[in-house]
Image (cartoon, rainbow over all chains, first blue to last red; front, side):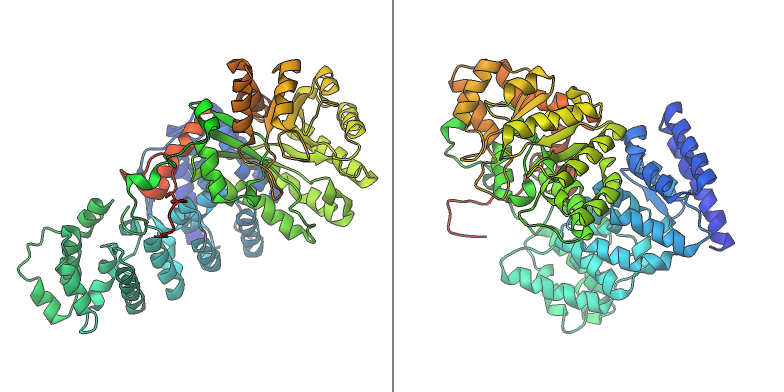
Length: 280
Length: 328
């Protein structure tokens, strides 16, 4: 791996370890350091796997206060998850084949908490382009917390997923009632194809007599045209004030003149975050 | 929560008509240390939660037909620590597992070797409370070989062992299982001998092992017989389970038997030991059971799945109305 990644990796590793230090006792830190030096001595895959799996037995699962490190929001983490993330950064990156094979091996036998730690750490793994298929596979999971580790506060998918996989991620988040506003890069990766699919989905929901997540209109807003505009008008006339706000915000983000005209008198104190807060 | 599930308080209420046995055990909590949920439905999980089952152990077993490759074993073990555990949590039930190569499939030696190779990947996972269920079926040399190998594995990992005793030639098979465990230097307190009956219990207890009884209609113990066993042998080191699986079995065997014991005048403390506490004492020797998780599984799941909706309480799934012919 290139020198830039190497420097960056060491910096984040140090940062993570300092957070671990603030949230653990001497015994835990000694154990982690011991594992690290044993790994450096032997460079054995079994050692790397064994430690990764055993981490919660030694660290416990205290909740870590929310904190931000570059590119990364540590939110609702437990100590074992943070320690596993740190441990992943101790894996040597000299050989690409060996590195990828070792990480894939972890995914292959991971329990739920291990999957959460692994998918949450995607942005920190070396050779980021190698994890696209793995991430797409993760999005097929039916386990809510695993999906959340991929979807929420995770910069990897927006940075590396191809459009079809990205669209699956967003659709699945909406299908499974995830707080979509916490998806990193949501607006940046908005695209017409996704907007069209979500509009079809809204029609299905209406046909079944069900409601539509108001945040869905955030992804349709920038692509409003004469075809989709009637849908927005319908939502804008909703009895539900959250839906009306969502329609207003969607129009405000569009380039379609009639949509802008429709909401020109609305006061701009609305935000998608406030919509999200009201439906939570 | 916003859209996919529009639920009202009514959707979450248990059915209004409770069977009499549920009234008798109201407020009691149960631990079923042997049940194969992989083969059961969500209706069972709901009924189990309603009947007070707080936690379960799902041992690795034979799925009804032999596996032909190592990957299906790997996926099975993965599902026990992954998907099945999550599925249980959605009903507020804490799910543990024991990992092992069952006796039937030990007879496919080539495959058995491959399974032995991957076992170390799984036995140290969180929530793995033992090696199991292992032991004898036909009592072949291959079964003995892998039983022994797995006893060594358990010893090395400091994990309890959950022994399946054979249906045929049970008494001798049970004795032989205990002899071999002693030969390998296992502490009998780390060994749970399962599927006991009136013929085997005395020796199992005398030799210091835990004695588990499976309440399983027609082929194993009935619960009236179980009441008599507890009357005769008391509650020390005795536990009951359902071993419910793909056969005609009953996932409510533990709470139903508790109700029957109560009706038969067995002391509440004895019922508590046999249907909850003893199993925890035995399997918590793995260091992997934390009783506060029984409550936590309910709350954690609520926040994870339902994002703090006011309607949904403790880890509940939307409740299907069994009495209505309308499906919403």
